[in-house]
Length: 195
Image 1 (cartoon, helix red, strand yellow):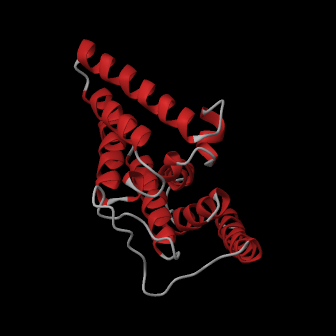
Image 2: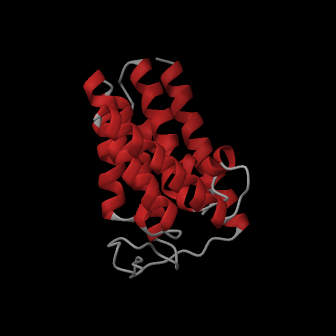
């Protein structure tokens, strides 16, 4: 599934859950859900977020980038003793050494990223960002779970798990899903504006 489809799923869900909330909460939910829906694919060199982060889009450079980033975060942790740096360091290093649809698509990955976002947001009263990020992240995993490739849900066990009902999407099918989700989201936005 492409990044734009994952984002469309996350945005549609966030807008649905944001109904009746203040505008700033709605905006926080949607933006955080968009980021959360792209985060699990950090383990792929050509993922949407990595297109912005990596100069060279291959696995070797991705591994070197995240291992270096992890080392920097670990250094910052040992010099400042700030917990988010420790978690960011560990997660970055694991992303650097893991393959696609493994760590970031697992239960451990969900808890690791949720812990990082929780440490950074809840201390500042930014619950909408935390909720939105989790919505996007978990829906990404659910969508990939429905594909024939599945996900390594129980990483570090190298067992791919997928739904008994699987969907193999070609470009046309994904465009249809993206268009329908976009229409749904626009409909929700227009409904919010009329109130």
